[in-house]
Image (cartoon, rainbow, N blue to C red; front, side, top):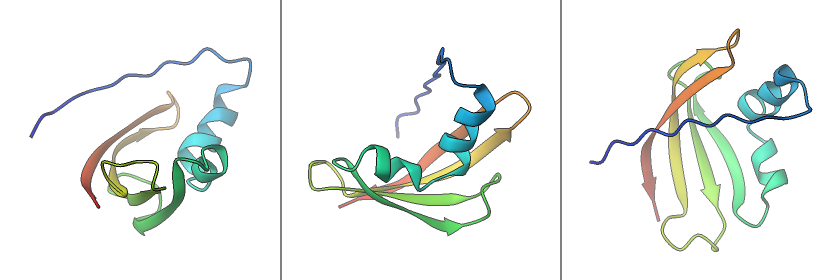
Length: 91
C-alpha cells in the first residue's frame, strides 16, 4: 500500500464557514457539482464525525473504479481541518 498526503488551501471570496459547510457537511453537493464524474454519495456509517464512512460512486467515465469509500479521520471545525482516508475502492 502506498501512503500519500495531499494538502489543499483555497483562496476564495466566499466565507470559509460557508465553503466548509458545502464541502464537508453536505455530501450530496458533489454529484450536483460534478454530475459527469460522480453519480452519488452514500453515508455508510456514522454522523459526519471521526469514523464516518461514505461511499462516493462514479459514473462510467472513470475507467479505473466505480466507487471509493472514504473514512473521516479528523474534523476540526474551528480551524477548518478535515482529514480522511480512502479505505476501499472497486469496480
